Length: 279
Image (tube, rainbow, N blue to C red; front, side, top):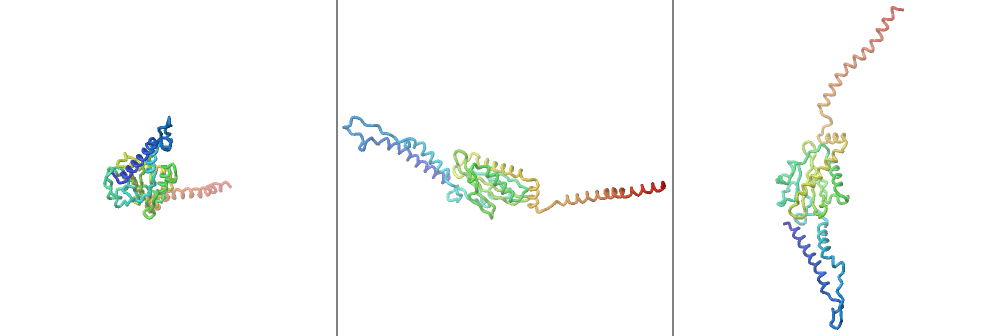
């Protein structure tokens, strides 16, 4: 179990013990300053504060979400807290709570096929791919503030996001890098849990969901933009085969147009020659 999981369990245990100690101490406290005295005929029952009464239920829940909702800055101070990954040296964890999608030649040390998928090659420019990815990510968050990268490296074109599960708010750290490859550009996307051991397939599902959203954003790009993006990536303004074919079509059309013009020019001269004898 990671160190963070032990710290979380210890913190919750302390909060739970403190919450149980409050109502117990209140119940033992008798009415009056010195408690019930023998000379009094009766003694009022102790009154519990409503806040103290619900503390055993509220305190553990508040402590749990206090840990889960703590900001994850990705500094990597403790094992498993994420941060900007070094994809060149990244190796699979012993736990199954991560998933990676990347081109086949990228991330060479990540050799666990069960936690790895092959990324697509997109015939667009890197800028178009990055902007489409950010638009897709924004749609995954209800609050746009949380859709912003917590860390970014413009030189590597790599960005870090933090995403949490819907109800229990488990934080997962996602690293994405946009890379050039043969035939276009691609994406390296890794999702890993901060807490726990088994993620029940949540990281794989999230990576696939984000990539499906990316495909949807790219499908809405204008057709001309796709062509322009492919030209920028491949470095070819127009395929040579299309140029040769267009020149051949123009060469075939030119003789036909010349014959039509010649017939139109000869037609009036014949009419003049036929009308001359009548005069």
